[in-house]
Amino acid sequence: MKNSPHKNTITKLGIVVLVLLNIGCDQLTKDVVRNTIAPMEYVAFLNDRFILTNVENTGAMLGFGANLPPIFKRILLQGLPIFVLLVLLFRVLKKPNLDRWLTLAFAFVIGGGIGNLIDRVAYGSVTDFFQIKWGVLRTGIFNMADVSVSIGILLIIVVSLRQKKLAL
Image (cartoon, rainbow, N blue to C red; front, side, top):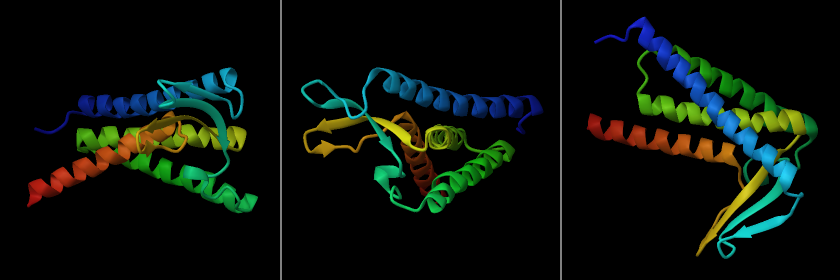
């Protein structure tokens, strides 16, 4: 059964809503952190397992690229992501029969990517604020945009592996 134009519109609207929800959640949590936790403050919960802090990351993940010259940093951390995210959003919105789990995954990746991009353009850095220390597990400091991107990538991997398994 083919998708009706009405169903496609709902799907496209759903993608946009998911992207906006990811951006909103990210920006709201960062705003709360910026306004309530001093830079480099360390607030521990549950025996030091969950830490809230306020760190400005001028690089990419785990500080990659923080020491690049400003023009290269702008190209690598702003220009390239804008291009990739716009192309990805355009392709997802134009694809008529994209798997619903892939649609969800791409919406998370796009929303999280835009959330961090907003910080880079508006502040010149990305606000990171959460860390987990659980036994031998110790994460870097991250934010909700990072969580969105990670969930999206994991979903893409799971869906891809599932489809590959079905094709065998």
